[in-house]
Image (cartoon, rainbow, N blue to C red; front, top):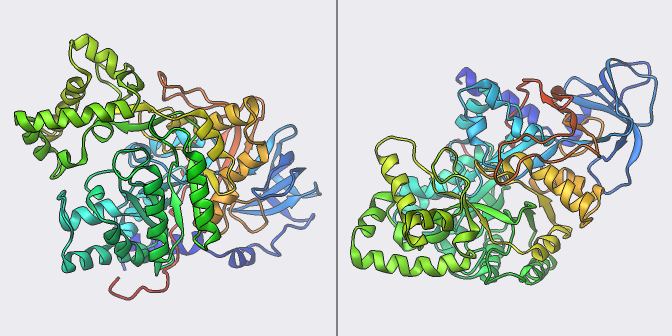
Length: 548
């Protein structure tokens, strides 16, 4: 076995220990008063990630483990942190991120992932929206071996699986192709993925039928995986929000696996007010025996792109080059523009699309403002930006420029979804949107302190223990003896976002200390440069053979 994979195998084993095994790794599970520990966090208000009431006490750390949570004792430590008046909690877990620009940077100082650390996040999921590579072991070894600041939990993604077999084509797989797709999912699961992620709104994943997704998802199900989905329609683009919720639940039911809705929302004017119906559908499925959960970010604007927001899916069949050919045909262009008009209305108009890609002349302006400057119809302004991105990419230049913050959600829907017992917090953090730098403190500042939609215990539970339970992250998400020492200390007065839509890359404030696997990653609000993150790969599950 290559040394890198052997090293990864060791890390997998350590990171994936069951709770019982974890307890055995700490002498007696809890430290005795006469024992030395590395760190004592003393006198803070402890929220342990569970349903219980907070209490004032100590947390002691030795190595990469928590060894004591409870009343103050006579332990000795080389470092004692005075946490009086501060909140002590598990490190936050972000189940839906696009942190690749940090984690995959050639610069080690960037790979510490300060944008998330400054929010108190110690673990992030990657490969979401169906974009995770099936080469899970190789990718995890590369990331963990390069030195990263947060733990990572990978998904195998439906998008790369489908593209490897079918490319960008809008067609169904034949039996041999379907078998090839299933084998790739099995490979990813056997290499440690937490489940299968899909992004059925995005081409070419959107070209798949429900039956195709079920067949592929079943390969993850039989290996203990979860189905995590950016559902086919969060609005009224195709089958509608409620139809899409039912489809996702049906995929889980037929495949025999838990269903998790990524960034659950009612997107656009056509579906505002439908959060109650979505909740009713999920509650009914849960009562019928389907394990259904969801995550949500606390922003009224989603993050997307002009092409995903405005172009009909048939127009991108075959990829960028095929789209350009269609745009060059007058009759096809007229059809595309016609369908774009309804999509623009659905999104709330050109004034509701803020262009957020960094470094372009239109950055920080709405599509409406850009169209007015160019004396163009908003649809034509959007197509000009989209075309420029495709042509730049084809020439090997910096592409993009089409990223948008789409203001499309109603406050009442966000509030109602946030209070559900199966909801957790996610950022969906992506470049140009403040959610990358500020989601968790934004939720705390606006929904806990200011508007009191939820209380502090619920906020912490939705950011820690409940998330760990959904994704079966053994030894994470709680402050308990024997668990890994991902421990957050934050100031309940100072913890706040600094990023906004016009300044999306400002680090949040108020985190006093953050330990990742026992290493101090944030000290007095600043990243220390420690790269203590690990790849949290699942143990090789049942259903794997030597060929997987």
